[in-house]
Image 1 (cartoon, helix red, strand yellow):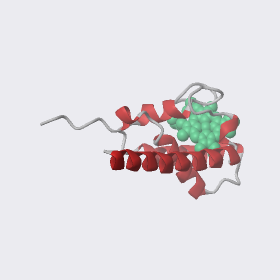
Image 2: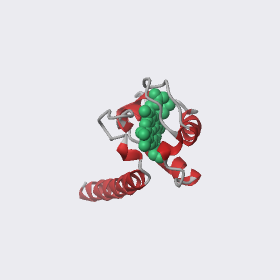
Image 3: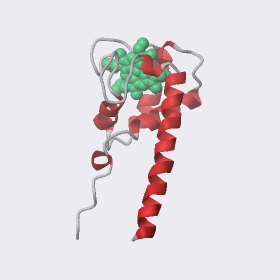
Length: 117
Ligand code: HEC
């Protein structure tokens, strides 16, 4: 019991450090000027993006292209500029950021528990 609690705590710590690193990348890339985690600002809240595409296997590839090219119409009439207007953001960073954003959905929505047999 005590061991599993420790293992959980360690896993949570690792996960939260990954999340912090990717949020720092988002800040550095200028994404957080228009986005926040839980609040709609200019662009949609990242948790809302994750929830909207939860369970959509094609979402990662679609969103990587959308962030690279920019676009409008999925969340309203305000356009997102290509790479948020920051051409210095690398394609690898875009992929990292999209994976991170998609990981933000509430766990219950992202991975529904398997029904008991
Ligand atoms: C100038 C403001 C602005 C910046 C900077 C910005 N975004 Fe956006 N973002 C938006 C807007 C506005 C939308 C909604 C577009 C729409 O309605 O289709 C959006 C939508 C998104 C979506 C959802 C796209 C969809 O089709 O559902 C993702 C993912 C995203 N942004 C990621 C990023 C990332 C990653 C960065 C940093 C590299 C970034 N954004 C920087 C304004 C911005």
